[in-house]
Image (cartoon, rainbow over all chains, first blue to last red):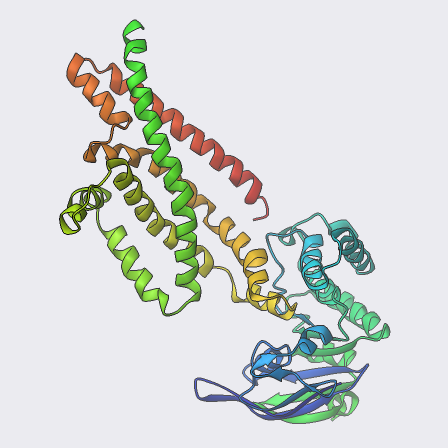
Amino acid sequence: MLKLQNITYAYDQEPILKGVGFEVNEGEILGILGLSGSGKTTLLKIISGLLVPDEGEYLIENQPAFIKQKKSDKVVSELGVVFQQFNLFPHLTVLDNLVMPLRLRTKQPKSECIATAVELLDVLGLKDQIAKFPYQCSGGQQQRIAIARALVLNPKILLIDEPTSSLDKENTKKVEELLKSLHGRGLTLIIITHDLPFAQAMCQRVIELSEGKVVYDGLAASYFNA
Amino acid sequence: MEYWLEILPPIAQGFKTSLTVYLLTMALALPLGLVLGLLADMVKPARPIIGVFTWIIRGTPLLLQLYVTMYAIPLLIPMRMDRFFAGTLTFVINYAAYFAEIFRSGLAIIPLGQWQAGQVLGLKKHEIIFNIILPQMFRNTLLPLINEAITLVKDTSLLAAIAIGEMLRNAKEIVGKDLRVDALVIAGIFYLLFSFMVVSVGKRLEKTYLKQM
């Protein structure tokens, strides 16, 4: 579904990723683990198309993710991204955070976009929040809004960065349940986290990054029992 | 009261001139400042040029700039400079420089994550600018823009320096002729009403656009 081979990336001559390679298979929950500075964030930016790797190959559904140094439409259509800081649009209501990108991308009539967004927000338990602005919502709600916004364009893969970093125990549990239910609906999940208990509870397979290299790629059960 | 009614028309005529320059300045300097602010933020090679422009304009008095436009330019390029045109042009350039800096600072504080969120949602550059960046920039800059709009009300009195018959100049002439201060009181009332209107519009804009902060 998604294949990275020998990816390298350097900031100001300083290598951050040194030949990273792995595959993501359809329907799996993959955890990307590693300490701060291991290259997780750079890898997230490359996978989501925000950074072009210096070298290496990145394929989505066997097609290049970058064509002439620009991300292909495939990256956008296949991947939904949830940032650690959520990056919700503060000037738009919760509903419009979903409707605006949906309208611009699909060119559907506004009424149809609203109906789609409301339905999705309802599924994620956010129907009561639609008229609010992001700052009026709790951290847990903001994260679910960010997930809803990523899902509104119907991606096949959800890439989520540090989903538990700003959540308490109760909300972490809720996110865990939500992500599992999304996975149950056929979504492939890539979770970037340094929260090992969360990764253990969620992931089927893990990749550990250390100093820009993959030092483990295998079953989560083996990784956590080692 | 009779005297006030007698001196009101020339003061009102001066107010009309001040108001015209005010509206033209706002209508032209805002878009010009926006373009300069966007260029300074997004086009690297344009930054030093705009930086020098805003440094010169903000670093010299508006009064000096009025003199340069009205008296120095016609000496360098032989031409007949229309006073109203010179005054308005100077105000537009001066305020565009201030607006450009306000817009640039309003853009600078928008987190990079907002661009990135637009990019991962597959939005095109112009869609990100018009739907994500500019609305947030206007929200970030609304208060300083309102301040500048109020300052401009008072700055229009500088037009008197190049002999434009704006409100304060007309009032001063009446005082000199009649040796009574009533004209200055009326001019003061006009200025207060004018800035009250600007403040009211500003408050309404604040209420509408800053409610999501």
